[in-house]
Figure 1 (tube, protein in one colour):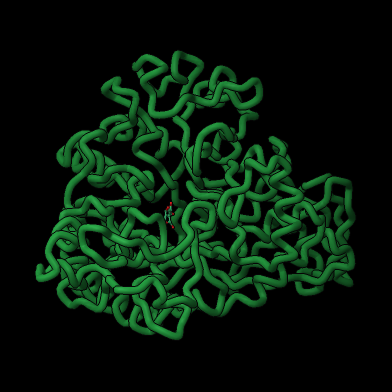
Figure 2 (figure 1 turned 180 degrees about the vertical axis):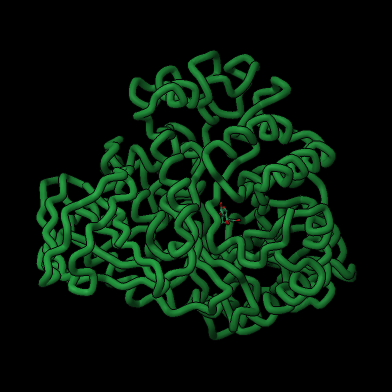
Length: 542
Ligand code: BGC
């Protein structure tokens, strides 16, 4: 694989769960070999990089985000050798692989924590954050509001409270400890030596604590990340760091540093606003947040997404906007969890192809590199009956065969049942049937991805919004000076007219890249008039 330094700027990413993808040994749980066997599929879709959810040794009380050993894999996915085979084969196909690196906390089953709680004099004691009272750092918010009442939990064995930002069984690591800092670098080297292309840094704003602050985004955190980056640049050039920092734009910006911290960071604020703009049938939520988005260094990139394995988080909206989002997108109260909505893309969008295409059309043309959550490319549904966020983590639907072609196990042995309701059930909604249909969502997504890959300006180009008297129309130009792409989208469920001033391009006849059709010429005075169908949109080459 060639070392192309900024490959991530034009990448198309796919978030996959080993557990949910494909079970090769019939135990009811997906595994490395199963995923390896489906690399054809991922390649066919056009993906250039896979982000794998945690697959480390873990008691799995937070789906693997509770790591018990950073340097081993959970035996339910088979062996490290199997993982290496998967990685090698992905690389042969020019597909890169990122792994989730959960450095903020471990499982309480991790040997470090076991030793730390047992023996106050052990060097591991200092790997965690202890206190005699539960009153310290009182300004830090609680993140898992549905299950945790405090960020401190009393440990009988240690005879002390320990600090945790997530579940009580996930003690936070103490980054004040130099030994711990080194230990985490070692864990990362372990995977980088194997050829891993980088890390999604989970929960990265919370590494340090400091009295009198909300314990998020502290300068110490940025200092440490710069150290990690330096290690990557010197020892493993071309590998990347992707920050999961669910924060406002001005607080995410520092995670890019001066191009010397993370290569990428998720754009959390834009995500809910895409959904909001759609229901409100107006462009303002999108244009407003994009205009607040700070410039980022040229070697950096936003990671954009519509859905992921967590709830659709509503932390980065105002209270009023949150109420609106719940009203529109979580009509059944069971769909709410913590500060968000636990549903997949297709059900959120009423299984309406036009809305699904529109949001993907925006995701793929706004600044950033797009991330697709496994299954959303075929419009999979969710299962509200499953606990926590498990309803959006059900097995991939490959075919109409038993267990949706996911596993040979008895249905009762699957880690979760397949979706089998009349609308989203694997019996009709599956990869095999979508492969056979030119009009399927999969085929459409594949075309969109292929097109995106032919348009590097979508990865590098600038963004400018165009004025349009109709507030239901969103129009923007992506440009690098030489090439220009104009996106015009109708956010409404009714026909709409777009009046645009395209004087700079007077006389040109735009080419609609998605429909592969020439549109009428732009008049000499630059006036351009377009009629758009409900949720209709164009990518126009000028
Ligand atoms: C992950 C969640 C996880 C949490 C705690 C997050 O940000 O995306 O799935 O529960 O970190 O590790």
